[in-house]
Structures are given as C-alpha cells and as structure tokens.
Length: 74
Image (cartoon, rainbow, N blue to C red; front, side, top):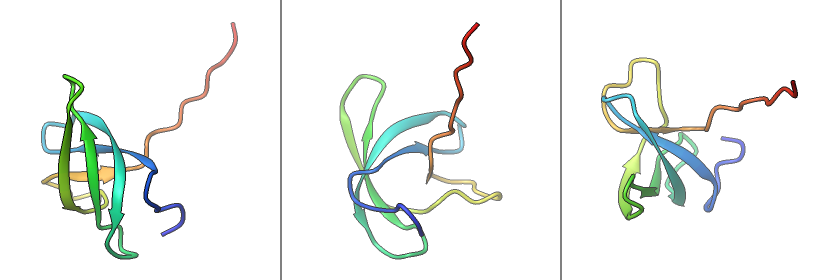
C-alpha cells in the first residue's frame, strides 16, 4: 500500500464514528494492518495493535487516511 510507513499520521476510529489522530508505529503487512499510537482527547497516548484499514462494512476499530480539506479564500 503506497505511503504506509512508520511515522505517518492517520485517523483511528470505531463503531461510534468519532476519529482520533494516530501515528503508525509498526506496519505488519501490505494489506494495511498496523500498530498505532493513538492520541486521546485528554492528550494521552494509547497503544492499539493489529488495527486494520477501514473497509465499507467495518464494524470494529480501524484506521483510515485523514480526509483532505481545501481552504478557499473569501
């Protein structure tokens, strides 16, 4: 998977639909399985292991690339 390397920032999410910032700490395979250091809302780091890439039918914890936003000057 292109760009999947240690140190990249991703989003970690789950069944509640909320996302948290995370940094990839280990890449397990080319299918998107990674370990993450997840930043909690209180500012703590929480380790998560063997987290899969998000799929359309995802029902448990997963990671995905951050959405890109474009700022338009007024």
